[in-house]
Image 1: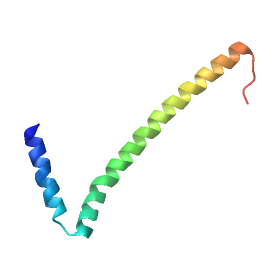
Image 2 (image 1 turned 60 degrees about the horizontal axis):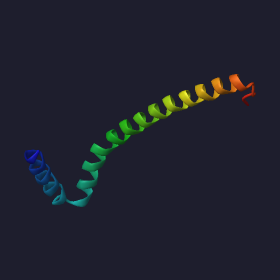
Image 3 (image 1 turned 120 degrees about the horizontal axis):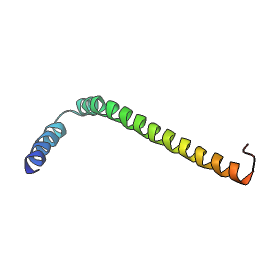
Length: 69
């Protein structure tokens, strides 16, 4: 773990010494794919939760006889 932290410190120092436009470009090049995969993951988790919730509501309404709009 210490080796990784030392490596990260060197990377952070290198990035901080670059001109600002280059810093932005590097962070966007790394960030956009990361943000995309996080968004896809959140969407899939939300879909699973919505389908489970709808299944629970539908089965609960079938037992009580209430109509779902």
